[in-house]
Structure formats: structure tokens, C-alpha cells
Length: 308
Image (cartoon, rainbow, N blue to C red; front, side, top):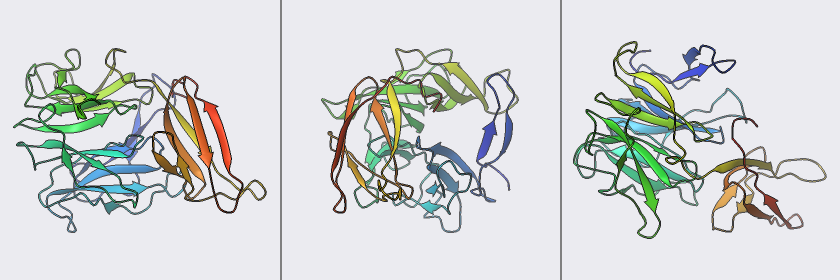
């Protein structure tokens, strides 16, 4: 294995050192990178470059865990959005199944696009996010906040403090687009290169890569506390199961509709996973031809998302 690989870091307690090893069976002799693990812990998206089966350059791949919370993963596949000449891509999943990637198809250099996962499981054609986010230079490494309303990304085209900086853009529901990008400023950005922004599940601890002085060489990973003014709306991760009340057998691929029109489905274990606004009520209903209908409204607690 050479070039870039997907690496897993672990530590037993906060403040202790990290141990690292290659992640699962995804690594090849070609570069892999820009990975995103979906919040439900069951899917991962990443980029694989120059594979013989590639549609050109680097393509986007997906992998799924074989069991919930398992270290075993199913074979990967390309996503249906790949085109010839695709550069390093990055996928980010939001509760409503939106995907974001960067590609050299738009305003110049690498742009950030949006795809929607459709009812049949395929992805829609990519849609450019427009000039509030994209420029004639390079935009890459998108990361969407838990509530789906704040987009963080790296750019060489917007006003920067030097080299490549990390920016943020808010979703404007009135105009159905992301607003003009805002530089995150110091201490995240400086006169050197910054990219690869990522937030912890609680939306407060941030990570990014930089080649600033004082590192080990090349791009190093740094962390920081994100101001509450720059964070997204608080959400709580909810996991539930749909089972036969008599046998305990899981009900697979059961639709779980929400009031806003979003529909979730249970997996092979009857599990569903929802990101819901904290401190609000969440009505759920389940209808199945072989069972009585089920309806209940759940009070969504405020949760720090640091513990199950």
C-alpha cells in the first residue's frame, strides 16, 4: 500500500495518545482519501483514485457495515454521480439524504455540488451550489453541519488570510441557496494552507489539516473549539427499532415518515436513525399491512451527543 490510505485512530480516554491503523479493507495500492462516516455509523463514503474500474481520475465509493457497530464492512461500489475526469471527491450526508461533492465541472477549478438521494436509492444529477460558494479557483472538502444549514469548506478563491482557508456558508431557505462565503478567521485560518474541516458529533470540537509551522511535516491535523455563534442548530441523534411484538423479529425496510415529508427506512436489523431538532416533539407513525398501525409522539431531549 502506498500514497494515501484510510486510517482509523483510537484512544481509550480523553487526553491520552492515539493509536492508528488502516481502516477496514478499503485500502489499495492507489490513493484513498476524503472519507466521511455517516452519523448512523453504518455507511462510509470516500474517494479512490486511478482504479482500473474508474470512470476517469478519482471516483466516489461507498461501503456499508455488515452489522450495526461491526468492524466488518461490505465490498465498496462507486456512486452513480461519477463522471470522467472526477477529481478527489468528498461526500457528506445530512438527515434528508443530501450529498455534497467537489468536482471540476463548474465555475472553474474544483467546485462543490449537491446531489439528492432519490426514492429508488440512486443519486440525482449534481447541481452546482453557485457563486456564493464556488469561484473560478478551487473549492473542496465540504462538511455539512448536523442541522443541514451550515456548510464548511476550503477555498483558494474567496478572500483568504493566505494560501487556502476554511469558509462557511449559511443556507438561505427564502432563496433556496447558500449565502456568500465567510472566512472562519484565526485561529483556524492563517497565512498557510488549511483544509479538511470536520466537526465532532456535538458540533463544538473541530478538526482540520494545516501545513503551518510547528507540525511534524506536510499537513498535520489540528483541533479547536468552535464558537457557538458559528455552530449549527442543536440536534439529537435518535435510534429506534421496529420489530414484531410477538416474535421479536425485525421488520426490514419499513418506512418511517416524518411530518416534513422525509421518509426513513429500517435496515436489516429493523433499525432506523434520525437526526431531530433538540427540545422539540417528534411524531412518528408506522403502518404495515400485517400489523396494527402504530403512532406516538416522542419528546426529543437536548443531548450532547457524546454518550449513547
